[in-house]
Amino acid sequence: MKLILFGATGMVGAGVLRQALADPQVEKVLAISRGACGVQHEKLRELLMPDLFDLAAAPEDLAGWDACIWGLGISTVGLGEAAYAEVTEELTLLWARALLAKNPNLSFCYCSAAGADGSAMWARVRQRVECELQTMPFRHVGAVRPAYIQPGPGIKSKVKLYQAFIVMVKPVSGLLVSLLPSMATTSERLGRAMLRVVQGRADRFILESADINRIGA
Ligand SMILES: NC(=O)c1ccc[n+]([C@@H]2O[C@H](COP(=O)([O-])OP(=O)(O)OC[C@H]3O[C@@H](n4cnc5c(N)ncnc54)[C@H](OP(=O)(O)O)[C@@H]3O)[C@@H](O)[C@H]2O)c1
Image 1 (cartoon, protein in one colour):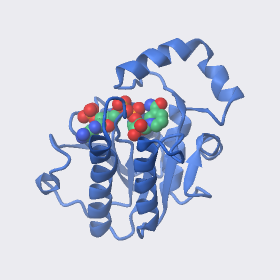
Image 2 (cartoon, protein in one colour):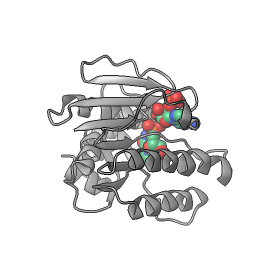
Image 3 (tube, helix red, strand yellow):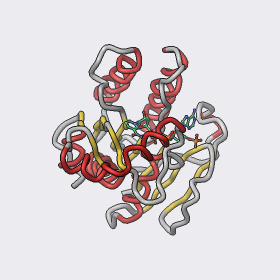
């Protein structure tokens, strides 16, 4: 499988990248991001674009890929709907449509978030993205909705508030994952679950934490 990954510089994407590089079924990974992810591996190539909205600036032909995993995203804190949707919805769908047009057999996995079935502004935006992706003719498609993610070694969130929360929870985080699998997962399981979505090995479109733990075990 030839995989395109978004968000490799962040917590979710770094977890996916680690699992993808270790997976013998993954032949190569193209990480598309604004900055380098700091990982060197024979299977990994990076495409750095200062502005991901500027699709026309992509310096290479993006045909010949089997799958795309979307781990890119932002926190809703302090943002209105338009600003939150610009990255969460517009950017995701811009790339999903463009990559599908160039790769008709593409599979796609989107990182959403726990609570996305609610009525808050951010949840409504997430639902729009999930619904739109589900209607697109991907080979395999799915959305993961993680809640708490226990980061793997060396993996760190870029959000300061979340970094502080992880430090606070660290003493009990192992317990959280084993006792409350419907509320917590690990970078490793999430990474594997997202890979399994694009490999056609998931049994549903939306994967909540318990599904992520089961499918990514
Ligand atoms: N961490 C969690 O516990 C958790 C739980 C549930 C859901 N999620 C969701 O998972 C997704 C990823 O979260 P995360 O924890 O990995 O976040 P993170 O550590 O803050 O990483 C965010 C990633 O998105 C990229 N990004 C953000 N805005 C961008 C933009 N405008 N243009 C290009 N790249 C952009 C960042 O790239 P740069 O390095 O260039 O900034 C980085 O790679 C988010 O949608 C988040 O809501 C996370």
